[in-house]
Image: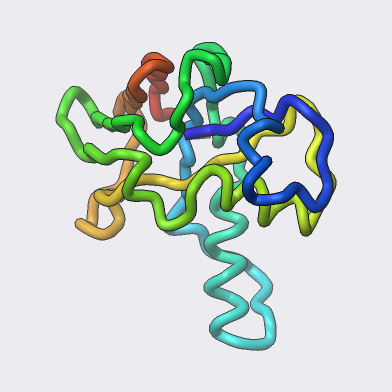
Length: 161
């Protein structure tokens, strides 16, 4: 689930956080899990963090769409089924009610780190079932399809540079 901010906000109160949102869309939170950093940092923990962080920053990662569904069509963002298929095979089937942090929690927290602006996109994470936990990795030619209730379906081919 991707949150699309609708109003500027800093230090947004938790009980008002959903009022700052314009709508929701789908984001494919792609990770390069086998990334090797040439220059290492000072500690193993730091290296693992940057392997994870840099694996999110590759060109073409984080495709989103197919459109923005406005908040009036989704009164409760914690009641949305999320499914993901790879090559037509269901890999993830979850619900936003199972998120560790609610959408309101995430907006509230992030607004204490940085001013949120209209149009900002916030990726809220992924349901259980990521491929790496089962030793599965995407490869060129695969097709990833994500569907979220009330929002739609996003389909992305996997390509190699």
